[in-house]
Length: 455
Image (cartoon, rainbow, N blue to C red):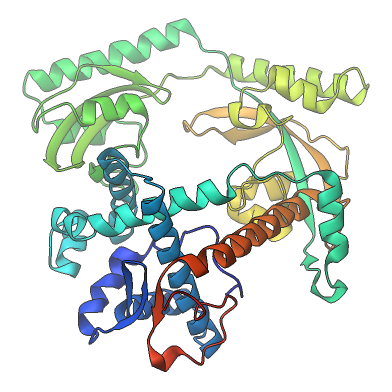
């Protein structure tokens, strides 16, 4: 746990679920900040979160938790003084997204409600005020630290100020670029797919069993009943699937059959089975638009020609990716593949097999500046395509430095600058606001002097 006040305010992501333990605690007031109170149960909830993350609870950790809580309450009080506000729509949106995530972890609404002994709606109502306060403190912190920038000179000075013994070791990493070529669509095959799904819908409307046709014809491996897959999707929340899918999932009544509709995956017909609040159960049939072997060959040959141009220095890989790649996410960054675990373009070598096992095999013997031959890849739409891979950089294990790790150091410099602004803000505000801390906590050594206030 960092020995400084948490500036990201991610601390309440587990609040809803650890808070259920609060009723087991004999509550008492630990501190008062302005009109806001900190309870013993608040501290216990935070300690529970730390334990759930596998960290050891030490006196220092507990003290840091208490100071974090004091800081949050100070933010909340200042937000009220500054007349900041959070709308009902903002609260609803945040609550919905949080509960959607946690229900996914449980597997179903029923499992969630069974575990906690109350409905999702009751849970939302119980913690609505907590969510309002959380969003309000986030707005206040953004007001204090928003729009902070650092210059290259700031980054350099920050790095030079570090104790050499505290500079972290960076594992071996790699940056990989890609150019993806999807085979061009064949109009005749598109027509064939649409006629097939239309015929299946007609058969359903004439009385044939939807589930039987799912098993016989659907090409969605996640819900076609083959290889252990179910024949339906259950407890699907809004936003889990593509927009076109959501449109019908949440606009139809149970038992209703959708018209034929198209997504990036192909053509669909859907039946909604049940709806419980903002989650639905449904079945659908997917018919993909086939790709001809001739079109696949053309895609491969196209990448061969692009690779030749790059190797002849007729075009840079980054420019070729921006102009010719069919992968929208990576083409905007010169083809660099983003690491989903970190959000940047660096991968530790052992991460590659977890993110995309095919990457490891393809780039294993490539050096910096090398390009792979075209290799088959499955797109997000579960369609075949070809791609070539390029090694932008490889680094050996090393101590963090300004040349290889500038972005990392820059982010640390921004965080450091934010922390200094927060520290100065706390020191300025403490003498102006009432703070009272229970006597049993008076011997804690906080980073800030919470005791010399308007007690």
